[in-house]
Image 1 (cartoon, rainbow, N blue to C red):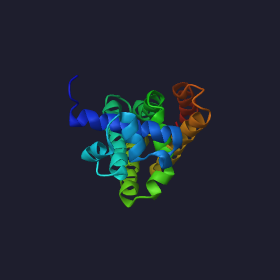
Image 2: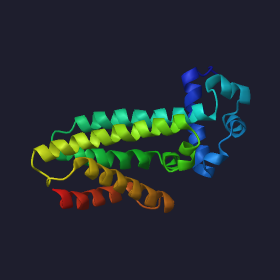
Image 3: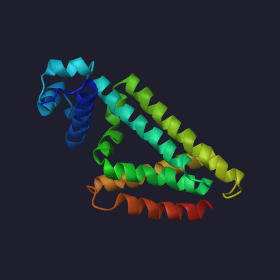
Image 4: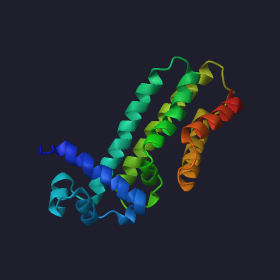
Length: 193
């Protein structure tokens, strides 16, 4: 059997860390449990990550990768309205494929325990908010929405995405997140366009 590269091993460790958080919350994530699940020793985990916080930073880096893909997907759309649709729907499609990530996103206790993790999450949220404000400013410049504060409107959009995802998670994922997201997005757009 071929030996795994460092990057492959780190991906496996991060995947399993996400699974552990999804199953039992952040408090259930331990190096011992992680080592057991990926079938390597605890010292081997420390060869790949400094500590638990470093593992969570790896998870957050994956969320940053999501943002890069989101930007690329949004840029492919022609109109500012299509870009707004893509911004919202891309979240639902990503989370629909990566249900376990919802547990990380909603595990606020992860981010209150570490200044580094809190700052990284704030950076991710700020980046995402700047992107949606930019899209909304384009829509506003085209006179397609009312004269509203786009910064405040961005918080409403991000909030409704979060609310739908939380409802989906609490229902044990028993409805189509993509369909529900599109339906609510259509209703929201009727209000602002």
